[in-house]
Every structure is written in C-alpha cells, then in structure tokens.
Image 1 (cartoon, rainbow, N blue to C red):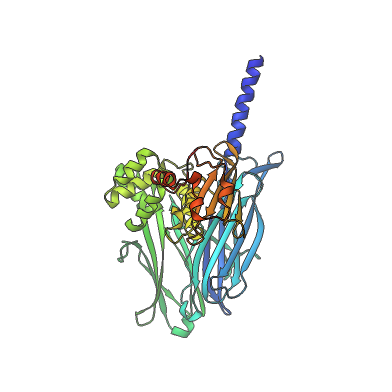
Image 2: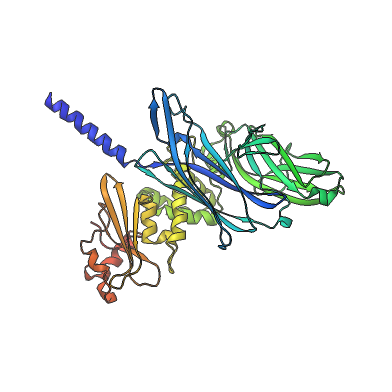
Length: 492
C-alpha cells in the first residue's frame, strides 16, 4: 500500500512539474485602420484575443471567466504629438464550462482616436491575467497616415457581420454596427468575404453627378478579375463621406492568396482612385481533392505566402529548432517548390491547434522580428546574435536585468526563466565585450546543455581584451562557435 501511494505521489509530482513548465501564450490579432471624418484622419484599432487559450477561473458553480491584461500604445515614429495609450483588462463573458468548444470565440475590442499625418507604430501587449505561468504576447504594426488630400479611400475592413447600431459600441458608425473580422487576412473555411470601405470627397469630384464603384477579386500575382467576381455599383447622390459594404461567396475559391480591388469611376468612365487588400483563403473541401504535394503548395501560399528571397531567410532561421534530419533536408533544398513544401510540413508537425494552423510559426516569427529590432549588431542581424539565438530557442525570458554602463564593469545582461526544460530559475548572462558592435555574447547559463562558466563575474570586469576569453582560450570559443550556430563558450 505504501509503494502504491508513493507511486501516485511521483506521478502527481511529474504532472505538476510539466504543468508548471507549460507557459500560457495568448493568441491575438490587431489591425490599425485609417479613416477620415470632417476633422481629419483618425485611426481605428481593432483587437481580437483568442479566448480558447486563456485560463478560466470558477466564480460559482457553472460560472467560469477569463481575464487578460492589455496594453496598447500607438505613436508617431517621428516622435511628434502625444501617443495614444490604453492599459486595461479585457474579460470574457461567463461560461457554463471550460470545454474547448465552449471557448471557441474571440474577445473583441476597438478604439478610435484622431491623428496627424505621419508614420505610425502600434504596439499591443496581451497577457493572461489569471496564471503566473503566462508570457506576454507582443505585436507591433507599422503603418502610415497620409494627408487628407491623399486619402481618397479608407482602409478596407473585413467584417464578421453588419448589424443594427448599438449606442456606445466602438464599432458603430453611420447608423450601423460593423463587427470586424480580425484574423490577419486569413479566412479558414469561411463561407463569405464581407468587407466595408469608405471613400471621400465624391461631392467635390462629382457634385451630384453619377459615379460608380467597381470591385473584383484577382489571384494575388495577377491583374485580371476572377470569373464571376466583377461588380459595378452606381453611387448617387455624392457625399463628403460615402460608405459601402458587400460580401463575396468564398466556398468555390480554392486555397491561395487573393486580392480585393476597389475602384472609384467618374461619369466619364475613367478610374479616379483605386485601392486593394490581399487575403488568404483556405478551403479544406476543395483542397481534399488535390494530391498531397499540390495541397502542401496551396496551403503554403494561404498560410505563409513568402517569396523565395524572404523564405530563404526564414528557412535559415529554423537552424535553432530543427532536428538533425530536418537540417540535412533543409540544406538539400534547391528549388522554390521544395522549399515551400518543406516549410509547410516543418510547421505542420509543430501544429497544436487545427483551428490555428499557422500559430506556431507566428510565435516564432514574432521572436525573429523582435530579435532583429532589438539585438542587431554591426556585423550580423539580430536573430544571428547570441541573444537572438536564446530568444528564438527558448522564448521570451520572465525577467531581463540590463547593466548597460559601469566604471568597473562591461555592459551585460542577465536573463531569467522561471521554468525552462524542467529546470527552475534558469539564467543566461550576456556580455558586451568590445563596446562597439552591440554584440552581447553569451558567457554563462545554468541550463543543462548550454555553456556554463562559473567565473562569469570575472569576465564582466573591465580588463584588457585578451583576458576576456573563457578560461583564457579564444581557440576553444571559436571551435564551439563553429559547431553550434549563435552560441559561444563551452557547453556544460
């Protein structure tokens, strides 16, 4: 009986350790869309948080609720003007249970604020507020706000529905509630593509004369309209702000990248202004009829769609997480189709949620983009540095302590992971040795398999360059660097 009890305890302990090791990652989408009113341009932020990944707490029997902490900052990249800042909690509705099917919805929020013409940056950070193991998901979007005379169309908005106006709702305007479909331009087995657009100054252009909107779909790399998608709608009378919405049936479109084109046509038949927006349509019913390799190419185009030059960069960035077999396969790729198929299958194997087939790649790409922004050195892009390697391999640390300047010490950083690979309190120590390239090299880590250096504190002291090498051996560093890309020093 005692052995049985101890066995149960052991199983529970292992389960608890694994549960602590799992880090809750919030999936989110956000758009920053530009419109105009009588006072000038304004930005509409549309935020959607995937409720299926959140932690739910029981408030009472059959009453469960999730809670996220959201930080939004939108600012001119020139530094002009005051930034738009929101720091708030976004709560789910109360649910009767926490079954996956019950949680399959999005928490949607929107904001509007006036802006001046400029190049803008939107930063959104979301964290599950009900678990200590949550990591912050960060999304950054850059966009431009043109002057009013160069803004004939608003941005095109994807819609989930058009409903009667709701007073005080952030998505209500012009007498209707335009509920957005916020999903990074990806439509997975969607029945329809519903969109909304505004166009401006038609009263000045045409007076009360007739004009028309022409709209159609094309394949992304082509200009001719897809058969049966071209529409022309007469618009009258002309107004300063004109509103239009429509829906296309997507059920007969095979999986690939498309573009929606909208043109404003004057009484003389000439196109005065045009705009477009791309989207990715995934149709599993039609794809099921394709051979496996053709389906892989089609799904690559829908979920990723990078040209060969960009894809080569992203394939190189898989170096830190691919297996030895995948590395050999990757280096043997010779043509674009093979690269696309490899990339698709690589992330298919790492897919955890069939409803979000590109989620694993999106998380990795966000780390890649962040590394390039923050860790760029004079000799290499940020993702190829030691800090970039650690970020891509293990994710965002729970704490970063920077020590940028000191009269006695070199600049260095200490990254801490509360839990990593079943180890607690893991640290990484990076040191800027040359003070010129912004190349913070890894000098020490307590993670098994990483370079361990008990004397790392001596390495941060300001001494002559030849004293900085680990255990006095630059040759040892070079040998290890050659065999493990992005790492430095000696493994444990």
